Image 1 (spheres, rainbow over the protein chains, first blue to last red):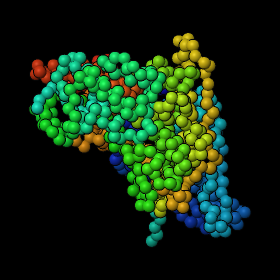
Image 2 (cartoon, rainbow over the protein chains, first blue to last red):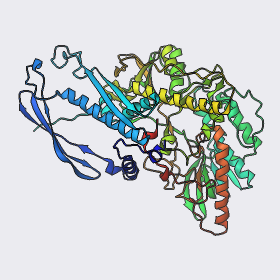
Image 3 (tube, each protein chain N blue to C red):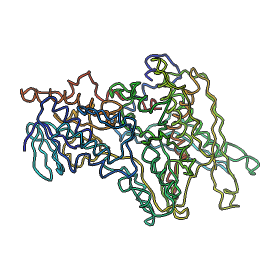
Image 4 (tube, chains in turn yellow, blue):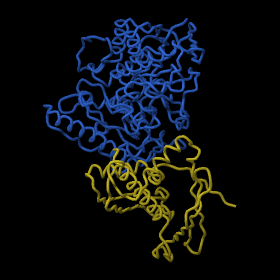
Length: 187
Length: 439
């Protein structure tokens, strides 16, 4: 398990920095409080755009190097203009990004060289919920499946452990599998 | 009253410490709030047997125990075993003496109890790791019509109302209670977060025999990758059973126990469960297989004759485990919190607890408080530290440190608690490593 020092593995994740952060933050838990932020604007129809730039962490305001912009819309079969991915697809995007980053970080720490990591995600939904046809049907996903294909210098069990550990430490996996209080206000 | 060392608690750890101090002729007393082995008498359910076989209670100075080495003691048997041990080693136990306060005083500590007041030059806290059931905050959201029980209050299924039972937690306590409550005719839903599956018997031997022989239980606290993790790892899914049965989620599902993910919240009488059960089961299977791989590797290397290695079918989880349950509608009458235990240090008036209320110590040496020691906590100095079997070696090392401390103190020499552990120990903070090492 001490492979970081013993074996040169390049997955492009700075594990020493992550370990350093963990050590520093266990001594200063207040700095571990982060607020992630997004601003969103209606464009027209079902089309909206969300921008991501600033966030709060390590006790102060922080910012991404550049601003990121995401268009969301619905496909034409919903009588929309399809100018972006659907919001629920963005949720899958978040889950894929989080689990994949986790796999890379855990692999780096364990000294496992990755060659490729691909994921296929599906979120299944009965849209009778969002259309208000049947109030017994929930609006959201009734299940999410993620299938990873990982090519790495590792045994099957080691790869399974990478994938399992990335779920254990994933923020988006936690957000999807556990309830979260959501407070929406308006002025 | 005055002595050199006060040991707080006359359980297996305090008694082993007493023996090690006696071996060095260090004057001491053992203060016990109740009787010897108090927690084993009063804070355990009726059917519980030790999770370790009888051979694995090797206490210093015990001598031959005269019991079936492969049996598992009941609680009354455990109590009388420890009573016999206390007598055998002539431990200076003062029963019915509850400590109400320990504070620093010149040359040591002032100890207030429900009987005498004491002064001691050093203290060994041996009051146990499981004094208080840890119940999550969501318990307060439970509808008042549903009974809420901790394992300290639970004795047997007959005390429960007829009807369904939600058991929260799937470590040793949770799986044992789910098993006997389901068998009593009360349908159980088991909410399982992180848990560790192991077979009771493997390749013809008890799993503890393998872990002991292969040195897994001897792993030292200053050698593990992630000590924080090692100290908080859940207890193995084991039951002390002469039939050697495996009590995992598959065994529980077979008798009709329903499985859900970790209890994530309670909202208007509805329990909400995490959707992470499949991954928790996968992590558990992987951990078990890594343990079995380690055992097989060791057995092959040593040429141990044993039946062929085997692997167990993966944990079976239904495709869509329940995510929520309206407790009253589902007929749940009782919630049992098998969510772990923690020590109680309310009487310790020395600032040595971390922000989560845990004792800051380096292998049982409380560096911030000269002359203060602890024993009997999870992974205190080695993996087996919390087992009866782990107390003897930890006590030997701590007694050596303590003797040096007392000697230096008597000679008026400044003594750095951090400096002189036998075996060159490191401070815990330097052993921190990423949580990514934990599976």
